[in-house]
Image (cartoon, rainbow, N blue to C red; front, top):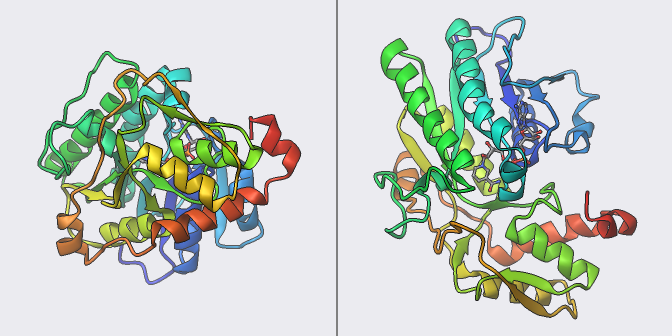
Length: 324
Ligand code: NAD
């Protein structure tokens, strides 16, 4: 950590939505960025603009297997993991492995390099919360054997092993609990509410709202999320910190807003609520505000407009294919 040369950072999940934006941010900070991804849910198109840069290297590798990086490292950001319910229900064992074995491998790497490591946890550690908004002190309401358990419990294990490395080995660790984040480079068909609604609106299809749409969500624009993560990495604090936007609204209203912003003629249809779908989700961000002087700045309408503009750049045949 004392080298006078450029800082070197390893970012796992680099070809994914958040990982690719983090690569951009650390490159912009003048650091040497090493991206790692096995492309199970990611896409190299998210980082293709970085390949020509001398500050960027990429390793296609599964972090649930042994991870070796030559040379020194200052920071590790562990963002590799399937992150949407349709992904982790489709690949449950890989999801459990990357949160457990993958995290263990990266903690070991951080220890051997004497690097600081930040792991990406999630609001899903709160499960279907019985308190709202959710402060970091809330222990959660998770069904370990439900379909979402593979993700939620892997992330809870990830937090536990990260704290164990901190307490037992004195490792310099950070844990961010990320709440729903959106923006350009989210996969159109990853099953999460915002990309699904935007894709349906752009295709002129009905927007499929689960349940009666009264369940609430709060969405954080990606640039706000990245800023919060960056500040947490640079802060001196080892317990989990929520980063998200407390601007909560019913899912049905989000669907209506997207229809309006895309000027679509789409209708709304209602589908069965998925098992263990949280009824409400809203971060308590007082800790991040005090500790990091951080708060989300991007207004929902502005963030949605930028996201819709990105999805409009996707060629129509890709948009229709539904597998982008
Ligand atoms: P994403 O699916 O877009 O990106 C995840 C990336 O990790 C993909 O590129 C995938 O190929 C890669 N990956 C998965 N397993 C891997 C493995 N074993 N080895 C190497 N690479 C692997 O998802 P995202 O939305 O960018 O999420 C990134 C991280 O943030 C995840 O850890 C997720 O749990 C966390 N998170 C995201 C959100 C959100 O709203 N986007 C919310 C909470 C937590």
